[in-house]
Length: 438
Ligand SMILES: *Cc1c(COP(=O)(O)O)cnc(C)c1O
Image (cartoon, rainbow, N blue to C red; front, side, top):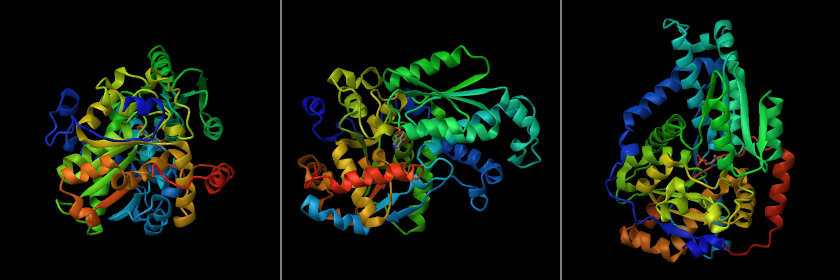
């Protein structure tokens, strides 16, 4: 497996450490479903404010996305895969999340609003008889303008914190690596966000941000590698999905398993979602995290059990990939601890396959996603068309239930991508000479 990761050969890995009942290490046991419900309640308190600040949220001020099936895409893959993909394939449309158009809207928004609430409560500003629309009033703006938010980001987290942070009146500083997508950098600067780009790895950018924030007065660092608040924000998505499955009469049980495919960078988003789904559905949900072949940090961390202590540099990889949202070298400690106990496995996808999938999803369903999000769409064919996938289905007695699987690929981002950038990417995917998928 290490050799395959080194040579950037796509893999499908089954997690041997997955336990029917998680051992609940200290990080894991500090969490509860009740906390997820409390996080959701905080988001609800802020809905009137979001409706005031963002016209697009006036009618439906919730940070939620739809769940839809993709039959045409599912059958269009047959040509490339060489066979059918059994089951019902759906997509969780987080690329359509309001305000920042990526899964980072969930984590970033929650972490920031929780901090804003804490600040305001501490200052005695919050009037419990009024709605949180009061957060847009002058005293709050004045308070927040005296505080800075700092975050290290491959792009989308910065966008999420930048957009909402600026609207609330905070100063926002975003640390990014040198190879961040230039449209994301420009967009942040247009918002009035200070962007600092760094030469080293993403982990270096996080370390520098953390260090600078600790030396800056009134500065809150949203720590992508360590934040329980980001994690909680993502975990709310699990409750949302559970409700949607129920509303759409999709049963999840021994004979109707749920397979979830989650794009993974440092692991915050996938682990938060995985935590809630595993807590709600137990052994009937099968969670796979997905990474670029160029940056398989979570797979490396779990495989070697070295978690946040390991970096893809050890494999000689630099992490350069078109999946900029996943271009990270080291997994987060919290996330790898959770995924080690909730993920059935993980897999890697090459840039060229991502690009081809990006085009196919557009051509078949008219859905446009950024490259990072496409790794979630390689899972189902890998499950059925790799030896490891077959063994997994067999050992879980699922071969006879293949047709009643619900597959959900998490579409983590894409609606903010400028037209010209998307058009170029789709052209590359259309013209690519890939004929088989691995
Ligand atoms: C950040 C991001 C992810 C993964 O989230 P992590 O918390 O870094 O694992 C997936 N897709 C997109 C588009 C992202 O921006």
